[in-house]
Image 1 (cartoon, rainbow, N blue to C red):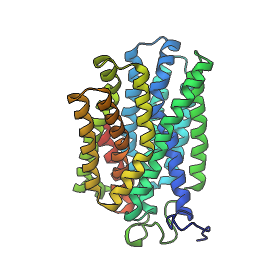
Image 2: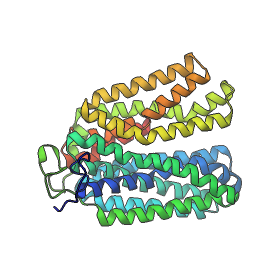
Image 3: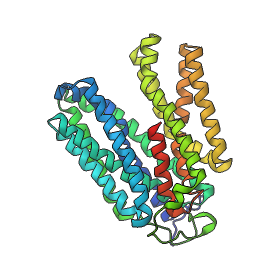
Image 4: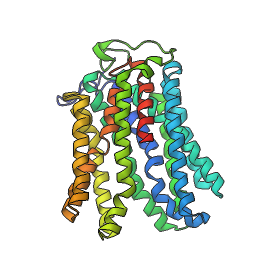
Length: 366
């Protein structure tokens, strides 16, 4: 395979086609991240525009998350048999179409339908994409690759945080619609990029499956992934991580503002800090899991999250809240990255998407 001239401090795979796969993975995570992070920003305007209650608006997010959880399991099961490339591309473009549909929805029923399709699309895109990375990277680099790909989700958090307020500020009534149409258009482009550039497996030994072995041909059902005890153990850890992060995302702002009298402006600044730290979070934890072990990386991330929660509960003060925000931001993408790295460690790499899909269900249930 032809390689570009590379700098000495760069990995040997960066300027091969493996780098193209990784860049596409970042883009897919970026596009799919809008479903997870943009809803909370657009809901206030949508409530006013469609005259719906907070409960109905909250169910929009819940429905998308529930459908996405099922989609991850199904797409992870289908990817080893039918290939990841087409599933990823269709999922990303389908999510983009659903976002545009949401932006044009005039009734609550259509909003729910669009959100459900968004959940289907993002589940189809993310699970096979993160599983596909296991085919292109050795175990020694798999955590780093997963961490770099995960930065796409953090960038979606920041991008949505900039674009949505700007569009809503320009048009209070229709701004939320313009935001979803913008995100949807980006996803359509990303889906087309995935269809053109993704490949099922490398042609050389750089970045292939462990010990340089080529992955087996597709066509098998991933039964081995669902029988593997280590995969179920990691799924349990993903459940625990999802549980702790759900507590944080649901009650962090309320706890600071209502229980401790912190202004919403300050709370917003802490949330931005968490988002900025999460950009590098996946890379740091992914690389750590490569250098030490997946288990130790999980332990350290849970330990830091535990310290953050203890500080907020036992020593409620502005200093404690800042330290807690730093620790939570630093560990926000840890479990996602480590799970993606684990997905190809304990089963054959062609079953990594199924393994990651099971872990994602665990995190979603948490």
